[in-house]
Image (cartoon, rainbow, N blue to C red):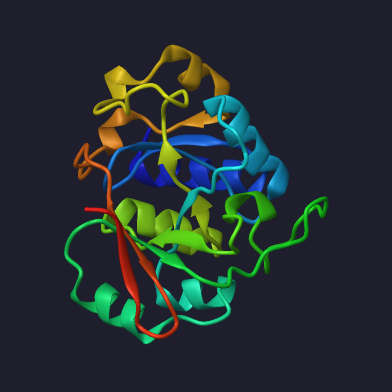
Length: 200
């Protein structure tokens, strides 16, 4: 399968409300359209994880982030501009649909957002991921491809078969050109310039 065909298949799966197993610039991830509550619920089901926990999302750039949070703190802009390693920023004030709503492309699914209304978003360094998110036109979920509580797989071969069987589309491992096998740094930012390091 050619790279463009793989990208288009993954994209169509996301548009259809499906789930994908794909490489990111950190680890192999489970993904779906982050504005589709039913698809997000399926991700929690696959991971056997409580939906009380929030999820990391991928956005193509800060312009996309701005559509889904009420305000981007200026410190977050500075961090993104100087960043050269995978970094997830937790933004306050996510713009999300109400629980029970079917969702729409202008609101994040309520089950991607933390109890305090914040949401973790990363702009991927891997070009393939950026293209996928950009072409979809809205954020996608990016959570490690493991059963909750079990070790994060470092390589495609480490991913449990039950995970591979559960998703709607598996990106062939040949696309894995930049995954580091390490989780991203996580920083929580506030509107007044506060920074809290969640994970180094």
